Length: 222
Image (cartoon, rainbow, N blue to C red):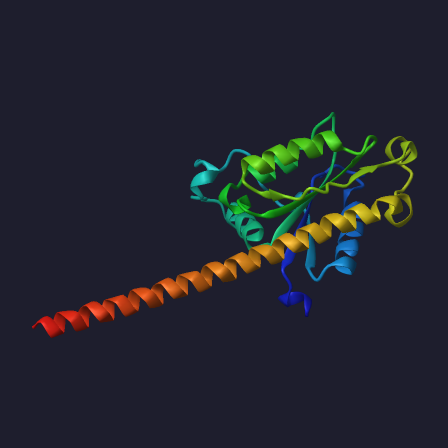
C-alpha cells in the first residue's frame, strides 16, 4: 500500500531544547515502525509549532478555537490514526512544551491509540507514568508496552553524539512491540467503525421498511 494511503502515526517529540537527542531517537523509532508495521510515520517537532499558552480565550474542551495555529494543530492531531510521544524525562517529569501541546486540545485526543517512548539517564519511566495518567484522563487508548530507553553517562553529560542504531539496539525489540500493539489497536478501531457503520445502515433500512409498512396500513384503512 502506498504511504499516502496508509494510516498516519504522529511521533511527537517532547523536547525543544538545543542539543537534544529527541530528533535522532524519534527518527530511529520511525524507521523501526516503518519496518515492522504497514503504517506511515510522521515526526512532529514541537519547535516548529508556535502554540502560545495565553492566546486562546476559551477552554479547549469546547473546541472553539480562534487562532489559526490552534486550528492547524487540532487538524494535525485529529487527522492522525495514532500518536507516539517520544520524550525525555526532566527532573522526574516530562517537558513543559509537550504538556502545553497536549493541553491546547481536548476532544482531538479522545480515543486516540497512543504509545509512549521515554528516555533519560534512568529510562524516563516516571515521566511515562505521568503521561499515561494524562492519557487516561483524556480517554486516550495508551498501549501497554512503553519502551524506556536509558542513555549513557557519556551521551548525557559529555555530549557524545548518540547513535541510536548502536546505542539503543537493545531496545529495538520493545519499540517494535509497542508499534505492533499500536497497529493492532488501529486495525481494531477500523473494524469497530465498520461494524458501527453497518449497524447504522441496517437500522436505517429497518426504519425505512417500517415507515413503508405504516403508510400501506394507513392507505388500506382509508
